[in-house]
Image: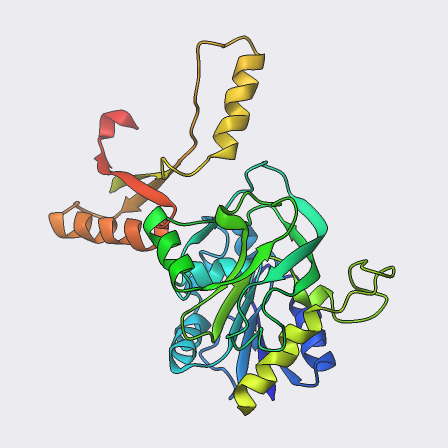
Length: 229
Length: 86
C-alpha cells in the first residue's frame, strides 16, 4: 500500500511518520502542501509539528492549503486519513472531524509516555486493537485539549466516535479525557499522542522495558487491512 | 483606504488558560480588584476604496470561515475603523 505523508511549512514529524509507514510494511510517499495532487496514494497521514508556527490557530492555515481540497475529497470518498497532533488540529479545522483543540488546561506544554485506552476498533486505523486495550504512546503538545459544545459531545459519545481516551491524569484537560476521535465512517481519525514515535524497539516509550514500546506500529498496520478488506 | 476591525474571543464556556495566567499575574502585582481576564484577537483588515455593505458581508463571512473557528471562538465584532481612531 502507498501511504502519503503530507509536509506543510513547519511540519516536524513527517520523516518519523514516513519511517513508521515503512516499518509497518507500506511504501511512504512524500506529498507537499502546495500541490493539488495526491499521487495516487491509498491512505494519508497528516503529521505533527507546528505548521505556520501555530499562527492564527493551530492547524488553521494548513487546513486551508491547496492540497486540502484533494484531502477532503478523498476523505469523503472513504480513503483512510490519519491526523497526528498538529494533523489532528488540521482535521478539526477542515471540519473533517468534530470539536476543536485548545490550549492545555494547565497552560503547560506536556511531554510524557501516555497510557491510552482504545475505545473504538471500527476505524481504518484501530482495527488491529482489542476494544478496551491499554496502549502507551508518546504525547507532546501545548494545545491538545479537546473541546466541543455539550450537544456535540453528546453526539460524539452517543455515536461512539471516541477512538482513544487518556488513562491516569488527563494531560490536557480534554472533555471526557478524549485523546482521539474518528468520523462515523471510521476512515478519518485524529489523535494528539504520536504513534509514529512508538514503532521501533529501542526508540519508543518505556513500557515493561526501557524504550521498548511499539504500540504505535499497529495503527500504521491497521490501514493496510482496511484497504485490503 | 479603510480599515475593517474584526474582534474574536474564545467562547465563554471554554477555559482560557492565558487569561487565567494574566489574571494571576495582575493579582500578584497588587491589582486585586481585577478578577477574570480573557484574551481575544483583533484583526485589522486594510481595504482599498470604500467599504460597501457587500464588502462588510464578505468580511463577516471571512471572519466566520477563517479568522475564527466558531467551534471554539465567537466573532464578537466586525466594524469599520473611523479615521479619528487611528
